[in-house]
Length: 112
Image 1 (cartoon, rainbow, N blue to C red):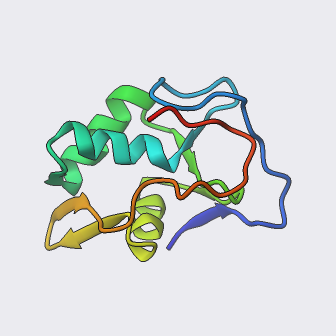
Image 2 (image 1 turned 30 degrees about the vertical axis):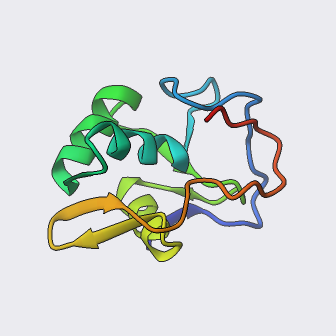
Image 3 (image 1 turned 90 degrees about the horizontal axis):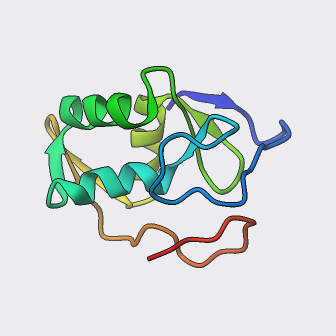
């Protein structure tokens, strides 16, 4: 997994991060990627997901999770898969068995 900003670093948050192109500080939250997979009926190839992410968020987007970790797209997919939020089967990526955000405490609201 490629984490480009450790938990020890100061995380940058924006107050609103759901279903919009890259937020002001440039961090795209992981659930935004889950939304892209969901938009493809819950399954796509990794290449399709990468192309969708580049189109929506920009080719150099930085992705993050609610704990303040920062990733490139490959690292985020691996992280989300390790948490059961995505599943991998060969070149395919699909929504996992664990829902997107589990209601944990953090400072950005989710609209579902």
